[in-house]
Image (cartoon, rainbow, N blue to C red):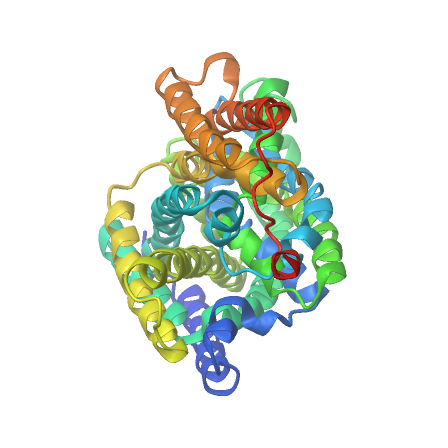
Length: 474
């Protein structure tokens, strides 16, 4: 694709603004590791909700959804990939106050409090590994847009995207992430919404589009109810045990803020859901010969005015940046807080925690870039990562917050059982259309419940509380 000058100028200006936010927050708001990792635990409803939404409207929910909407298997029903996320986040309104009450920084930290060192370490390894892959998917999405803007080879564009994300993340931490998320949410939502009528008009109008599409391509349920329901369960599971989501609740100013933020975040995601799917459908009608991965950028850059293309490009890159920096920061936090500080240097100084976290941001960003260079399907990479990080720890973390009588062995065995279940189900090709993460989480819940019930009947005492105030009373 040829150089898109106007969109390129808009994107460069936007990225400079984001880097400015990183510099400003680092200079004036980062005083200690808690400021860097959880924004000093003082974010309000709008910041937390927008951050939740922005983190789930990244490459997979923009470029990836349009890509699937382009295909015969999904069509317009690809919008469920985002709408299911909005539905999946609603139950978190129940769990969010418990998460905030724990006063933790990472998921493995809470798991270890309840179920011991082994459970915490396994969770840390699963989380960090999956976050590598999620970082890669967002870098790949950003690279795709940059490639379309300037006509660069995709591999070179991926490297450029990685460098931008790494610099931004190293500078600002979660404070910068939260501020930029608020901006990014409005930019991507408005950008794609404004582009939609231009794209439809540029393709000859809705009648011309429907005539050019295969039969059934505009069905809202084309992919099937089993897949749609599995997506809802998948999102609930991965949100309740996803480090980048939990970090937002940990950063909320109080428990009530955490609960309200989950509900507001669900609304923000729902508003956006089907916009990229409609653009992908238009691309299929107007440009059936292109690669599916180029559906969104091809439709917008060819059918909408240049300034709209620039706004959308900035929106998508901003969304993928938002997700990538969150994934990197969470992975670094886990490595530093749950592995290095616990097993290598328990007495590390607070400022050195920030320095070491920034160092690992660079390492994780480069590792994610390396994975992105393989150019794996974005949504495939996302769903694999979700299963890896969430299926096993789901019950130990989620139920561990609210099930007071849960035993130590229930936590450990559920993590192992759920992880093995997800891997086996993935190898079997996800029979009956049930996603590996859903099957693995179900195994995790069953193991957790059975072991707790059996051991409780045998007189085995409950595991320690996940809450610091309750631990101090003892």
